[in-house]
Image (tube, rainbow, N blue to C red; front, side, top):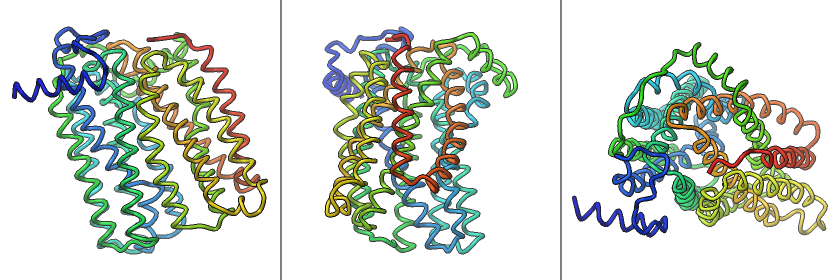
Length: 437
């Protein structure tokens, strides 16, 4: 065990550039010596989580599942809103519950286990589900999975704040994003091999591997060495809402951060419309989809570690840079329809811009995650994260619905231009945020 700890410390030092493993700002003194081992366990947990996320994608795998079992088309339209908002909206209500736990990693473990169970249920439905009943059961399993994802999300950030020091969190999330990119690349290759309509058994295998990924996530979370924290201040759901509203009124920097984060949703919302625009113009289905998935994986592998190290220096500056990148990608993507006919009808230009936007989106995610963790203290970090995520979940539902209506009316190219304007607003908003590193 001692040799394993030494090897983990050396790997940690190589990954972070911390020669003595003693950069321990903003974490308890007792957690300092455990930081190298915890860093690696966080990284392995992220591998399991990202693998599972990709193999149960509500944008890719679950629509195929609904198609195979013959579920109604309107149910397919509920997959992404349930997946995203279900994970974010309830977080404020569980923040007080998590606050009552001296060790928050066990909440993370519970979330991982529940996600694994939900993925196994989806695998079973791939084999046995049929029609409207099967589709309804898929949505029910997805609700459980999304709520458990929210449980893990807030606990993960709280545990990270207690076990990983400032100037190391962005690096950790950067390497996690790089791992996610590699997993996305592998998932894209597997899906291309399965073809446009993978069989029931193939989908069941994919979802079974996703369940194993979340089991790995839970196992690594359980092995993290977490010092017990303060439990005073735990609130029930209504008290959490009142405290959250008070926090938004009193902490102007936090309110301003959430405004910036809302405008930065433009990067996430632009990705599917850019992909859709490429499909509409090129007429490519599986080939174009596979290319987009592979490019997404490569972009994540390359970009995330760079963004992570930059976020440790200034997460505010990362958000500003990513906002300008989103603006450029949205405008570039919208302008592709005016390319000469031969080029505008090919998927490659859209795939290249999509890859650039994926790189930028990783900057948005890492920048805002690092910022909210660093701006909060150990006493209020869970509440900050939960409130911010709950607000974002609500906005995702509202903006996603409105954008869907606008896309039907304006078209994908015009909608990308609108999202570019929102990204410009995000730049000016994030530029006014205070530094927190």
